[in-house]
Amino acid sequence: MLTHAGLVLISIAIGAMVGAAGVGGFFMPPALTLLMDVTIHEGMATSLFTFIFTGVVGTFYFHRKGSIDWSLAWPLCLGAACTGFLGAWVGHQLSTVTLSLILAAVILIAGVYTLSTVSRCWTLQLPDDARSQQLTMAIIGALTGFLSGLTGIGGPALSVPLMVLCGSSILPAIGVGQVLQIVGALSGSAANLRYGSIDFGLAAFISAFEIVGVLVGGFIVHRVRIVLIKQLVGGLCLIAGCTFILRTL
Image (cartoon, rainbow, N blue to C red; front, side):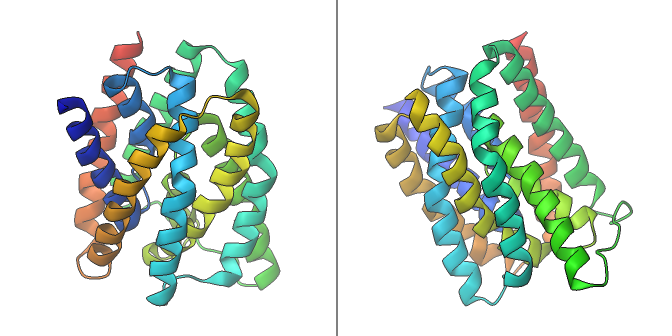
């Protein structure tokens, strides 16, 4: 009972971080391995599957708020659709230790970057012409889709930092990331279905509370300073990454 209560709170918190800052999905795979005693492969596959549904809800909410730039969303999603399956396939070829360390490294990098962008000292600029912007988004989408399929984390956890790095404003980046969640998770889950590693009952339980969190996070991000959210998420990433490395080793 306590384990499931903890999973409920974690699912809501992760959903809120995905909706509010675009990052947070990387917490679910390690949470499942710690709380539900599943393998890292099953935890990643189950986690990724839940982001199909949080992506649908997040996309609907952010679209209604006018926070999605669809001209950037479609090339981003196209890139992710092409690589999500490949990432999930590669993940199944790796050992549990290797995959765990990759996930921990991604979490740590995301945390460091999230904190570094508080001052916006690392940002570049998107190209001026539409074709170059779309090519940039397609490359970001391809990288995001591969890593999302590989590690089971939600697309926004990777696409939002990359888009901000390239000069995008944070709110549109989070909005586009909601759309990317759907495509990346669908592509990666198609590969995971082939290997039979998704716990659908657990995924349904998690998704229900993640959706609540996404709506809460989406409400928050349109009303508070994003700097506060970045600081919180960045700090949590560093703690989670270090904890996961220590547990793996």
